[in-house]
Image (cartoon, rainbow, N blue to C red; front, side, top):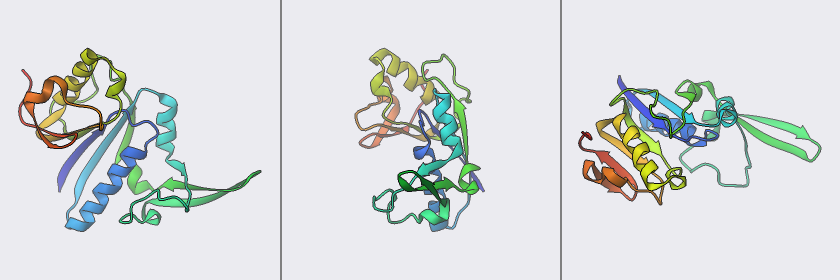
Length: 184
């Protein structure tokens, strides 16, 4: 069984890391392979981390919240909550998804991150770097990059780029980069 380590930086309320876990489980089913998957989801705000760890979300059947290839009942328990304005449908993440994730506090501006060098196969850091100066973006990306394995994939947001890492990565999508060499 292959280990698959994915970091989700700035995970906010948890939708992104849970989506990653669902995608991994669907891929395993499709490929007939099993991965021992670990997804640390990090965030600076403890209140949203707790929300994410609880794994309870509002659900609207009328909206298109899931792609066609995902059956929500496979990954979520449905609950109906009655309140003064009527009924509210909530979905709760099933334990098989929760076991794949861990939620932890991490400030992207901290000098050190709680991970090992070359620990991750994939690092997601989407739509958060836009809030930092160019100098801080480079510092953050270099720290994240040090935790990514050679051949690992870095996913950035649609308006973000690898900054000073451009000579250490190969672009394979608009904002998807493969780590080709270490920074020395």
